[in-house]
Length: 364
Ligand SMILES: [Zn+2]
Image 1 (cartoon, rainbow, N blue to C red):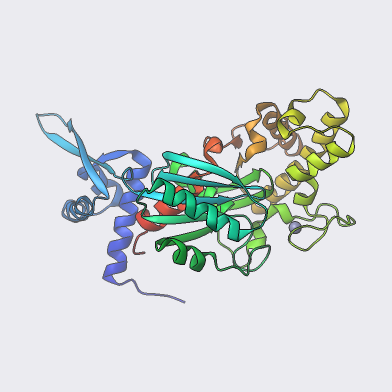
Image 2: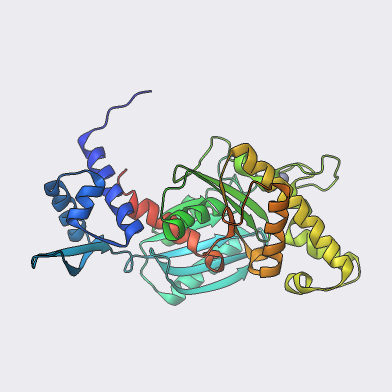
């Protein structure tokens, strides 16, 4: 339905566009902002003044613009805004204190075994121990929050708000990482991107026109629950059988290697020269690459961003990319890459959703 825009919304929209622009370019003069946003210099001066007063942007260096004129550059001020992040994976949780700009202050990794009472207790103990004043608690969690998948009956927001007496933001962890990719890595509006995660579990998220897609049914972007073996008897955490995740998760790989009589860590498995293990890993790569390439084709995305602990191993990442290129020769090495944020994946999503909701889009 067509909607009108009231003045307040318009003001917030301009403010948000200006902040995203500063995020893309680092720092700009008021004159450059006016030109890029197609707003009058007077309007820009007013927005910037308000943002300086609210401590959201700061003035920096003056640059010479010929004939002795100088222009002051304006940049974002995300450094002194802090958050407490809880990033839940299938087998572990990262508790982290960081800035909205993605700078880690400190973190602790704890095991996770589906026991949320334990998580809340550990999270609270670590929070009290550090006594760092944060603006928000960001929870990034596996699975869907709206219906499909696990943990759907728990009201995390309410539990965390009652525990910490702070504002709480909740997001799926792959969507949060995709948001981090847009805010801290790409910093430009891409037509379409597909984020693919291979960590303990499998996940994906779509970006269209520079925005992370939120569908009515989250399962539309859950590549981990793409049925790859319809005749499989292995039950997935989503309730179905034969999902990609049940075939290629870290747990499944470790189990299969263990069944062959070898008790190895995932790092040892990925470095192994044992022919049987290489064959096993290749078969997992083939399944995942097939699901990913087919998904990218259906969605018509032109860039694929990989992340998750498996891609920390360069040989594995290279093999996976080669398989995708072999399956779809129209892809090039420029179209598929490991995210530059991969080593920060335990906390960067929490920073991104906090920055997006409380900084870039405040009031929209
Ligand atoms: Zn599933």
